Length: 196
Image (cartoon, rainbow, N blue to C red; front, side, top):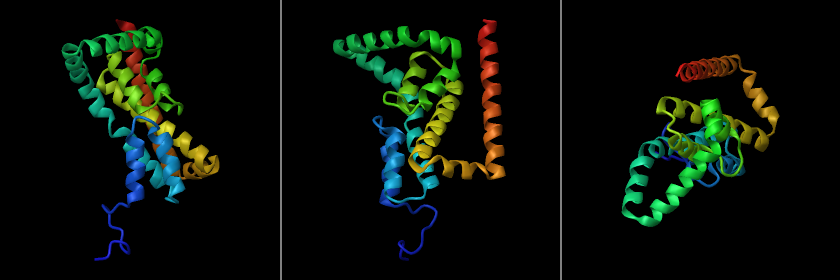
């Protein structure tokens, strides 16, 4: 069967793969992946989906593997012990008040702001450095990535296409339910931390 005439569920073009993998890279992330996909002329919502999935792909491995890898490097090599120890300490000192005060909200904002030095990779590092539990870190990073993706898509395609997407009642309800669940989780997290 000629795949160029029939696009099955699992058939993906090289341009679509490129959007996914560019978005998975630590430099640029979806801030680069979305404009790349739009430049190829791909559907904006397909580009958004591929970029978000690509950007989220490294999050769980980072959160699960950063501790054993950094510990191993710091034990084996004095250079890594010195450099990583200093980097981790500076980061903790610089951001600890914000993370302790705002918890997952700070992580969401940090990941969602589409600027250099922020994003899913750095958000995962921050979550690991400050010991944010996976059950809080992963939803916060996902919401931050979705928010960053919508911001980059809005800027890249114009805000009107995003507003047209939100005109769909089902999409609006899903978005409001998601925001409600997030607010509930954060309130519960803050009340749990205030009780300590």
